[in-house]
Structures are given as C-alpha cells and as structure tokens.
Image (cartoon, rainbow, N blue to C red; front, side):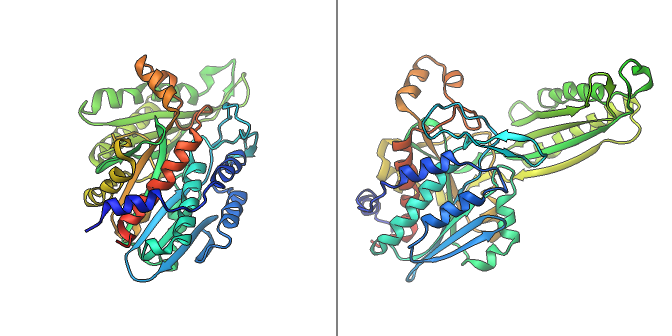
Length: 421
C-alpha cells in the first residue's frame, strides 16, 4: 500500500533548489523551433542534464533524448515531455516572447512560437529529473525521462520507436505524461478513459484542367470542385454522425493557383479530423472518400483525386487502474486543486509510447490560466471568448503556479510507484 500522506510530504518538502526553472523556461520560450528542427532546443536540454548521475542518450529519432536514473530495486517508470513549437506569431508581449522565424516543411517562412506549452512540459520534466537525482533517498527503482521532439506533426514518438528506443531503455511498467491547457493555474485535472481525441490529417489533391482565366469553359476548375467538397464535408458530421457521438472534420488549408488570370490545374485541401470512437472514424472516412469521388466525377475531373492520410495521433485513453493509483497522490499533494478532468478534443502522440511496450499509462492536464483572469471570464460566462487557448498567439501560462504544479504533479505521479515508505 502507498502511504499517500508520506508521499505528499516528500513532494512538498524535497528541498531541491528549482529556482533555475524560470530562466530555463523563458530561454526555451524565447527560442522555439519547429518539428524536426529542434537542434538548439535539444542542446539546451542536454546542457540541463549535465551533471545528472544517469545514462543520457540523444539523437533518437531526430532530436529525441532519454535519461535513465537507476536507484536499486523497484518498478520502472517513464515520464515523457515534448519540446517542439508551432508556426504561430507570438502576441503575448512578455519580455521573453519569441521573435523567431523558420522555414516550414513546404518552404514557407513562418513565425515560430511555443504556443502549446511544450516549453513548460520540458521545464517540468527537467525539474523532476533533478529532484529524483538529488533525492535518491526518497525512491527506489528505475526512472526514464523522455524528451520527445516532433509532437505537433504526430511523428516524434514513432520516430524514436523506429530508431531503436525499445532496445535502448528498460521496458517501463507504466508511462506518464501531462499537458498544460486553459484552466485555473495550478489545478491538476485527471480522469480514466478517453481524454484526448484520436486525429488524422488528410491531404486531398484535386486534378483539373488549366486554362486562361477568360476561358473557363475550356477548363475543369479544381477550385470550384474544392469549394463544392468543402460545402459537402460540413454535412457529414451534421447529417451522418449520431448527435450522441463526436466527430470533427475541419478544412485547415486550401491551396490553388498562382495568378488571378489562370485557372489552375490542381487544388489541394488539407483536413483535420478527430474522433473518440474508431467505428465513427471509419464511417466518416468512408463518407469523405464518397464526397470527394462524387464531386470529382460530377465536374468531369480527368482522373481520381489523390487522398493521403498523415500525421496520425493516437487517442489518449487512460488506464482506469493507473488513474486509481495515481489520483490519490494528486489529491494528497494538491488538495482541492486536484480535480476531475473532462474530455477534450485536441490530440497527442504520447500514447504511441506505452502502446509500443504494451503497458498502461496516465496522461493528465494542468491548468495554466491566471486565476483572476479565469474567474472574471467564468463570472461573465465568457471563457470561450476571453481565455486564450493552445495554438493561439496569445496563449501563455501563468509561470509560477504552472511551473510548480507541472513539476510537482510529475513528481507525485512518479513517486506513486517509486516512493520509499
């Protein structure tokens, strides 16, 4: 049996100096890098691990890093944090705001920002590693800290697995992770079962026939076909999915043409789709194919459209027994700030890691919105309008309570398994 009161005392009174975390976080935030480009970020992480008494491996699946701390007999626990950023223009106005730009995977110059909180995730895991390294009297077993690149494109976890991760580190008994999201800063939200949706991106290339803009009758206009497809896609969720189920079909990008007087020879749509149920997903994807094929046929396209699935994200489906084991630790450490989570629609590739080993996992959410701001928005019933969310240029965690909560939630969860009573 776990003595959760003793565990909570160890978490609250570990006495390891973590004041460096704020400067570490601000440095990461000011220097974001896009997926598969995280060379400088990886170097900062490796520098932060300098002096830790453990095995450190880098360059896994691109820029992935793992640190293994061994401390006698006991379970093996893996904790993961991601560290890539997004092509978003930062509008927070803080002194450490990003002013960086980078070239994305299709060759466009984009502003770059840590608009999803991965810099905070990395800061928390770095703090966790240092506490476990310096307070080995508190625990026994094996700890694996995994710093993952390329979460935003859904490729980082699989890339590390494909690059030999499973042979490089011990098989964990459980995998843990967390994500900051809108909510009162410092609150820890947990739940069993489906929490984050599964997702796929779908690239649809529509073939047409180009002509001069003044002679549309000589063309097969792929932009018109694309417009018809977009309209029809909106009817799939509204008219073919049971209202008791959940599905999202969003058109993220539409690209076509190079000049206003040329009807292009092709158009490209990129969709983002999300679900909690695989049967619903199967039906929706069949409907998308039907709509695309029918609209191309109706317009006389010269050949079938190309439909490519990419950037898959596994559903986060928390193991009930793991939840039941870890949640009392959160309750003991955070009291009334340990709360029930609700299902959310974003997606994550974290689940690919425990799935590869066939082990249970728990993934939770930490609120990061300044409490006064959250309370004012809630009182005015304007949370959806007034609270910045992940992937927006105004998204920024309240640093102090969020750093403390993410670091100590991670420590509490890990010590649930490794704590020496």
